[in-house]
Length: 507
Ligand code: AHR
Image (cartoon, rainbow, N blue to C red; front, side, top):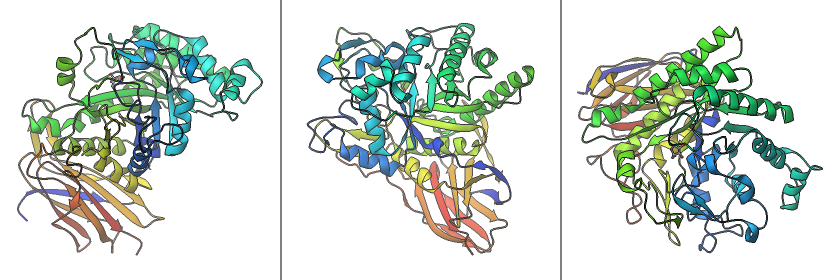
């Protein structure tokens, strides 16, 4: 044992919150090939009668995705939902300005809801508050959720969906703080529109769960003030405020990249503080939670260079941001999930962005195979094994100085405990790019726990990635140095690695 020493104390008496399954959500946007030739490809050898790729559906179920946000993203701010329902031959083909493509509308709400059923996930629908407003939001709600007997609900029935969809989670627009957003507004303008839309929707159905747009990133010049103003208007009528964050490796600065979750941590804490401050000023006992409904690694610099320049080409489902994720990216994704879980008391929904092809966990080729990106693995393992309650850990670890995020603990960790299943799951990331960490985890109150499984994502080449030719180059391996000795879980964590330890606590 020779690495940097780190100590974690686990005690099942100290609980943050129950694990909220909605933390393992993802996102399907009409962007690039996420929908077309991603999850939907009529004519593909593995397509079902609806045109849904069954190879993709199998991977989605394996991932353990729980909610899926749809249909955007920036796409939604110019979207007319009516274009995507009813007989396909009557659906219009339109220019799609957000991603500069042609939208055929072959896939719309009805297809999404059938796909959702196949995938076994909960839908989260984003409304267009960019080019549209209150009336269209109410119309969509009536079409989707009212049983029958009104013009719009009967239209849904006529479109082949006799049962209401019962969609509970709705996003009031998307990234309305961003100047790139169609219909971008000031916080004051958006706050009023979101509040009025929320009130109108609640008049139709008081039980909906509504998400107001927070900031598109913690770096936005309006961050903080935006949340405060929007919540001043919406505090009584929404349940969540959203947060979005994307991270990338800049140059060879592995340390900063590996510490990305420190930024997400601060982001969450600052939004919670802002929301609670507004609640205090309004004298409210309500609590607004966070929907972290876009998060991932995204090589935005490459996107700016390669795809952001307007051209004359308008194509159906062009390749957009098909980032091929590396081992290092997978470690960062694992660490972002750790952070979301650690804040399970206030982050009550989250969506990794996105599911297929665009910034994706799953990649496909038209007419060809589907495969797991490196980032698929920490997501799938965390979703499968983080059950029960999130525990409040005590972590003593050396710190690491980073250019972008200052001084951060070298260890990022969370544990979940499921007393009914007799399982403790510990997830840890060694953020140090070059040093091993020697981990000692005290298992207070869990005496007699035994190690069931220990896996690690690490390797000599941080740029290793899964590709169509080599789809299993980056997969988790059995942990070479992990054991429980004297009620202590001990392990050597390789540099820049993500690990998961499962312990049997039933005795
Ligand atoms: O997920 C890709 C894009 O990132 C979304 O459309 C937008 O909301 C965000 O800026």
